[in-house]
Image 1 (cartoon, rainbow, N blue to C red):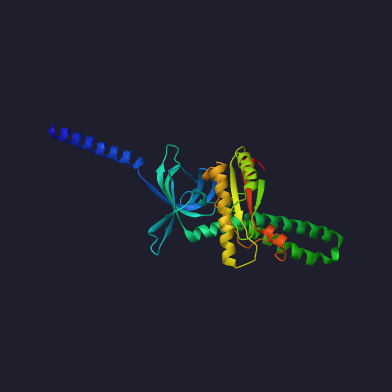
Image 2: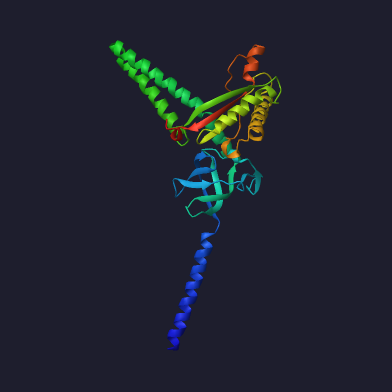
Length: 299
C-alpha cells in the first residue's frame, strides 16, 4: 500500500515538472538563420534550412543590427529599411499563437547587405533588359519566316538570347516582382545634397498617394554626375538619397517598414551627357518610386 502511495507521488511530481517545462518552452527565445525572400511592411517571409516560408513579424521594438569586427562580436544599429529581399539574416524572437516568429533582434553582415542592395538595384534594369531581349526575339522570329535560307543562323541567335533571359530570371527569381505605381525625380545643384523646398509638395503628394496602395513600398535611389572623383560622387549620391528619404519619413509620415534601404548609385546609369552643364544637371538626381507587389496588385 505504501509502495503504491510513493509511486503515485513520484508520478504526480514528474507530471508537474513536465508541465513546467512545456510552459517555459512556449515563451523561450528562438534563434533562426535564413534568407529574406519577401517583405511587405512589418511582415517578412524567410527561407531557413528547415522552413521554406517562415513568417517573421517586425514590431516597433525590433532591433536591427549589422555585426562588425573580426569576431563579429560588435553590432551597429541599423534602420529597419535595411531588411530587403535577398538579405541573409539571423533572427532572435518568440513564436506567437499563429506560429509566426515575432522578432526581437535581426542581425546581418555588412557584405551580405551590400550584395542584397546590388541585386535589388539591378532588379528594374534587368526587367527592362529582359523586355528588350524578348522584343529582339520577336523580330528575329519574323525574319525567320521571311528568310528561310537564314534559318540556322537566326535560330542560333534566338537560343543565345533565350539563355541570357533564363539566366537573368534565375538570378532574380528569389526577389519579389514589383510594379512601379508612381515616380518623382528630385534634382540637385552641383556638389549639393540639400533637398530644394520646391520638391516638398511633390514628395508629400507621392507619400500620401502611396498610403492608398495595398502592400506598397517606397524605393529611393541617389545618383551623381561623373564630374569630379568617383569617391566624392558616391558619397554625394548617398547623402542625396538619405535626405530625400528623411523628407518622406519625417514630413510625409511614411513608416520605416514601408521604406526600402536608400540606394547610393554614384556615377552609374547616367541619363545625359556630362559634357554640358545641362546634361550634368540631369544626372544629379534622386529617383523616388512607389512600388507595389504584382502578386498583391493582381497583375
